[in-house]
Amino acid sequence: METIIGSIERVLSSVTALVCAAVAVVAYIVRDVVPLDWQWVTVVVMWLFGAVALAKTLENALRAGRRAWISRRASKRREQRRADEKAKTQEEERQKLEQREASRLAVLKRLEFLADDEILLIASALRSRSQTIQISLSSPTARALSSKGILANAGGLGEEDNWPWTFRDFIWEHLIERSNEFQQRAEKVNLRPR
Image 1 (spheres, rainbow, N blue to C red):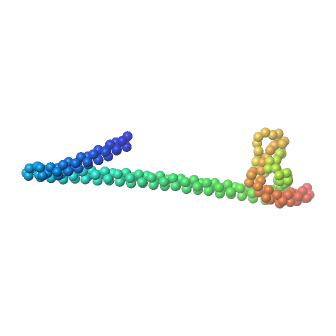
Image 2: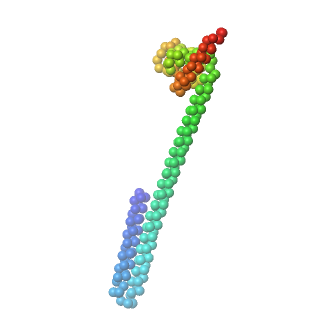
């Protein structure tokens, strides 16, 4: 509603400026036709309506300039807000990636401090080249590896004594790269007296 009223005001102001200018021009033209003792009235009318026309024209120009300035300022604010939101989103994504990487490094460090039965389980999976292994749902070794973030309960269907457990993808890739090392660690565990 305000934009309609504003548009009407702008049109009326422009029309007023044009009418005043027309009256001033007419007063200038008829100045020579009017008797000499009334010519001062035509000069006053000409200058008065000319001044009003000029004032209205300036007012319209200033309003247009102000609207353009406000529009540019609002546009800059929107752009700045978008840039700030984008920067904030990028920072949050960067922090998430850093946290994920830190979490992954912490899990990978845990591979250095595994119990003997955990090493044997990992070596067995590496020998079979199977990222998913079938062992008891209540297996203390599987639960220990799960609590360390190395192994995950695959869920789904299965028997309690033959349940699917899966090595997380980034762990499995790391284990494949270090397969020989884990096979050697398993051999050392097997050679220890019990």
